[in-house]
Image (cartoon, rainbow, N blue to C red; front, top):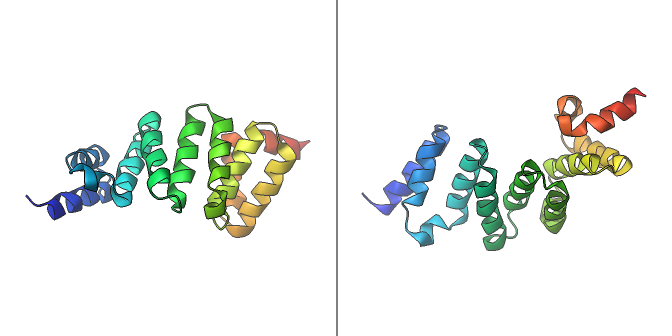
Length: 157
């Protein structure tokens, strides 16, 4: 089999939601291809879906190093940190990548979640409003997000 076939196989498995198989295909690639942003992205997103937070964090941290202008690395590394109960570190990861994330509504939404959990409700509210301005989807999704429970409680008072 050719290298091109192996890359297409990894992409195909990922698109079919066959995440273990996608990871196996990426793992079998030569290092110089395995460490490219597209293959790191496939591996990282597969690991996220499988809730393998530590491994996904390693992949997305590498993506941040190799492709510092790619917002995906910062967003997903931060999410992994948050899932590993390291919310303050997740916030810091987002802030490190802020220059590349300011046009992304998910940046503001996730930062709102982290600030909310860290007890900074005023700032969390500002960030949430920014996210909702950029993406109307967040006008309803925040109502069921457990990370924003303290903010919802604040509005019910």
